[in-house]
Image (cartoon, rainbow, N blue to C red; front, side, top):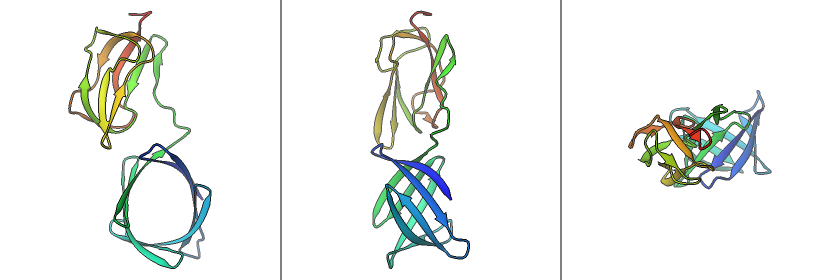
Length: 170
């Protein structure tokens, strides 16, 4: 049995369990508290068939890093795989804090250069991901120590974008 969590574009997390019998192609998928018996057929790199409740549907699924894109019934669904046990880099040590990319995306603005100070909740870096604008800030005032990205750069999930120093150390 495989267990994982997928987060949809609206930020809703779905716990998913998939189990299959070695003798049958039928798999049991349990998501959002409901169980479904499905039969998946097709090549991994092309269109696939989903047989559910006697209905056959064609779909495509693509995994890009930790994001799953599914095309089915003329609609696109995007899910990000979340590992709830995965430690995200937050602190380097007690005196420094890293500002990390919360999801893959493109850097739109960098509002501060190294050595400049910022106020609490002030926009430090602005990103775009999945057609959403993300403003990255700090809950406390401080100073920018280093910047590790550039405007227009495509950054992966958890990339360190900037190193921050709390105001007490600034």
